[in-house]
Amino acid sequence: MPLVVAVAVLMIPVAGSVLDHNRAATDAKAAEIILGSRPRPGSRLQGLPSKIIIPSLSIDLAVVTQHYSPSIKSWPVSPSTANYAAETPLINNTQGQSLIYGHDTRGIFGPLVNLKPGAAAYVYTSDGHVFKYTFTGSTDISPQKIGIVDKMARMPAGLSLITCSGEYFQYRHLMAFRLLQAS
Image (cartoon, rainbow, N blue to C red; front, side):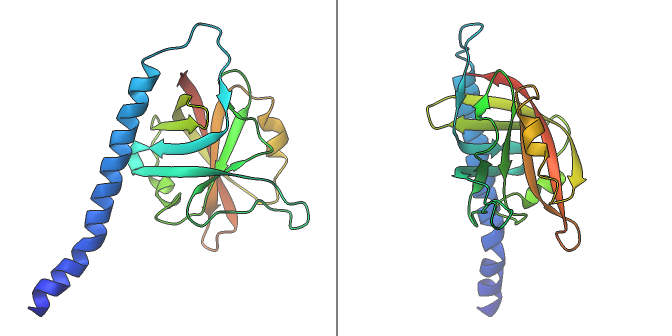
């Protein structure tokens, strides 16, 4: 009997992982259906991000909006969701990189360490738009390098994700995504 209990306890993380993967895959398929109804050419789409999905890594998270705090020189970080940096452009299909960030934990952005070039990311907005991106590359930067936010507004439409990295979480891992499609 103790062996059966031990096996059951060990299977709990595996079952959770399978459920996360299935949910992310299902939500990515739903996003592709929405993207199949393309907008009129020249349509300007934008919105506040409400959900991010990276199906290859089983990431499927709500996104909350956070504002930079000058007093602590940082953005607040939700412990259970992804976070949108309100000082960056809204998710859009015309100009500007939107920044979504989160903790480097298994349930948030920890899996991003395994992100492969070409991986798809989907972002839903609060007003029903869906944006599809492809991962193009990453770099580690200093947490004090907040000047990147000003540059993001002048860049082509895209998405940047950021999480902690380094042995003591002393760096920020910045990942760039190019916009593929919006609806």
